[in-house]
Structures are given as C-alpha cells and as structure tokens.
Image (tube, rainbow, N blue to C red; front, side):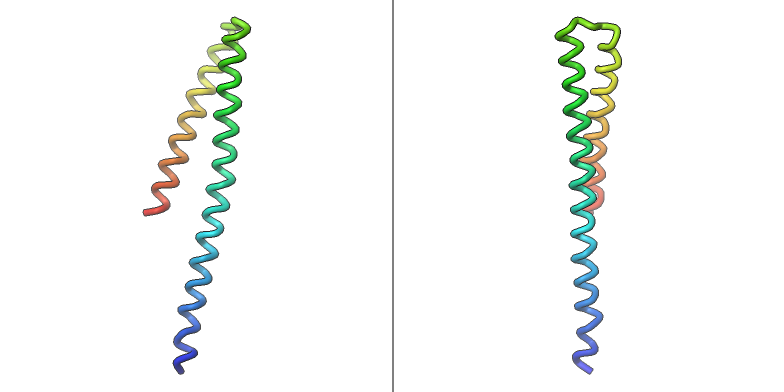
Length: 83
C-alpha cells in the first residue's frame, strides 16, 4: 500500500514540472515577440527621424508607445502568473 500512496504524489510532481516547463516555453515565446516588436518600433522611430519623414513619424511613435505598453503588460502578466 505504501507504494500505491506514493504514485499520485509523483504523478502530481510530474504534472507540476510539466506545467512549469510549458509556462516557461510560453513566456519565452511571448518575450521574443515583445522584444521583436520593441526593436522594430524603435527602428521605425529612428528611421523616420533620420529621414525627417514627419508624415510617417506619428505612426512610428504610436507603434513605439503600443510596443512599450505590450512590454509592460508582459511583465505584469509574468508577475501575475508567479503569484
């Protein structure tokens, strides 16, 4: 009976480990998307400023602000999942 009592506990550990690994994978993939959005938005702002293209500069600034907001939301989501 002692072995049978240990089985659910080890299965729970494996399930917990699998959840942590999947969570880390999801966080890593979303972090890649967030970093790429920030990189592209910063590059757009620099490019439009360099070319003095003020008609597209507003779009670049808006994209940069939205990308920064996404990055902040990612950090809040990451912290929220840890609690």
